[in-house]
Amino acid sequence: MKPISPHLLPDNAAIDESGNLSIAGVSLTTIAEQYGTPVFVYDEDHLRARCHEAVTAFGRDSVIYASKAFLCTAMAKLVHDEGLLLDVATGGELFVALHAGVPADHCVLHGNNKSVEELRMAMTAGVRHIVVDSFDELARIESLVDEGLTAPRVQLRI
Image (tube, rainbow, N blue to C red; front, side):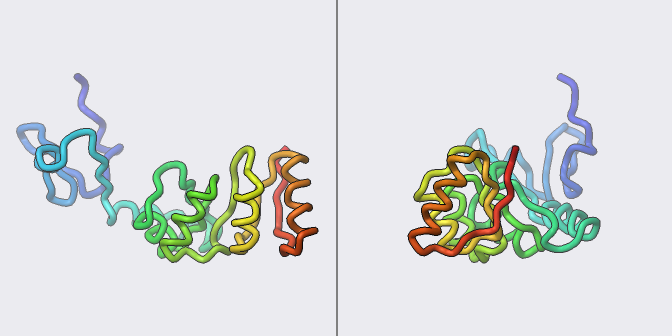
């Protein structure tokens, strides 16, 4: 098996003389023994550094984290704290972001075939904008506005 290229690993990763990988001084072998496999390991310092690089390059609130990459309350809070917006594709993802303390106006609702309930949730919460992927979806938003909800900012994906 060909070894992984070190540039693909977090900054705090190290491979010892036996070929064991550690991240921030924590052995992944130990983690696997303790928690089993598969197991997901994230290096918070590395994540924050990458977020900082993006925000420095493009500006605060100009970078959007794709929650489909990985989302839990801790990740939502981390990327928000680092100045990123969150791209959420479902009502469940929006719920996680809001539960993590991310303000709704730092969330963008983006996804295919959004239900009336998901649109209502996003509009009621006050998301930054909704990426609309069809005229049917636009009609659903218009019907919610007719019911008294505030018209959201939209981007039309064509």
